[in-house]
Image (cartoon, rainbow, N blue to C red; front, side):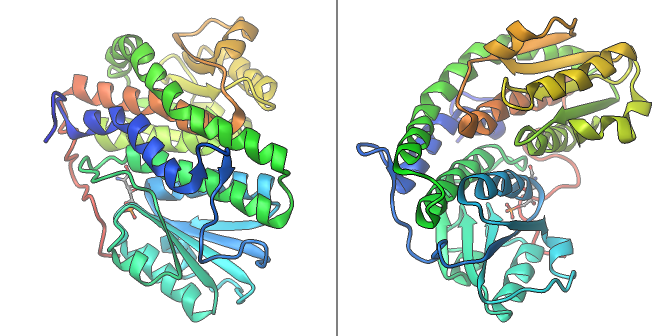
Length: 364
Ligand code: M6R
C-alpha cells in the first residue's frame, strides 16, 4: 500500500525518520544515551574487520569503514562482494566479517560470507530480512528494522544500514576503549536527535528539489563529488540517479577530480557537490572552484555554515541544518534520494520498477 504517495520509493523516503528511530531503539538506550550491548561479535577481541556487500549496501559499508576506523580504531577491509569472494585475500580467525544486505539473499554477498566462514572468521549480518539466508548463516544478526522495502531503488534500507553501522562503530569503540563514556553519550545523543532533524529536512527541501529536478532532467551526464563520508554518498547519489532516471551519473572522491574527471567538465555536465561544513570543507570548496573555473554548473548540497562560507555562484544551493558529523551521511542522503526520485518522475520512468533491475539479485 502506497498510502497517499505516488510511488513506493516516495513513501519509503518519507518513512525514514520513523523507521530509523525504530532501528536505533534496538541499538541505543534513549534514556541513558548509551549503546546497548549486542551479542555475537566481540569487537574488542578482533584484529580487523572485513566488510562485503553489493550496490547501495556496499556504499553503506564504505561509510561504515570510516566510522569503524575513526571511532573504534579497527582496520576495515571492504570490497564489493563479487570481487571480495574471488580475491583470495589472506584472512584469519582473529578477524570478524560483516555482510550488509537488505534482502539477505544476494548471491555474491552470500558467497563472500561462506568464504569467510570457511576461513574461521566470526560472521555478522546487517540485514533487513531477519529470516533470510544471510541472517541464518551468520553468528550475529544486526537487524536494520526498516520494514519491507518495495521500491527497487534502496532508500530507507540504506539509511537504516547507516544508522546501525554508526551505532555498532560506537559500540565497538566503547569495547575497544577508543571512545570515552562522554564521547559515547555525545555520539548517541546525536543519533537520537537524527529522526527529528530528518523530518524537518524532508519537509524543508521538497519544493526546491522538485524545481531543481526539472532542470536536472534535461542533462545527459551528472557528476557527484564528496570527501570523507560524503564520498560514499556521492557514489550513492550517482547510483540512485542512474538507476531510476537513466541519466548517466558518476560519483568521485572530490580529491580525484584533477586525476581525470575534470576533463569532462563543461556547461553540459552539472556537478553535485556534497559538502557539510566539516574538516574537509575547505578542500572540497577548492575542488568546487576548479569546476566553476571551467564553466561547470554546480549543485551545492551543504549546511548553513557551509552556505555562509562559500561565495561561489551555483545553479542551486541546498542548505541543510548544521548537524554533528556522525549523522551527516543520513541527513545528506535525503536531498540526494529526493533529487533522483523527482528527476525520474519528471522523466516519466517506472520509478519503482526501473528497467533491467531486480529487487533481489540471487544470481551471480
Ligand atoms: O538486498 P541487497 O541489499 O543485498 O541488495 C544489494 C543491491 O543489489 C542493492 O542495494 C541495489 O544496488 C539497489 N538497487 C540500489 O538502489
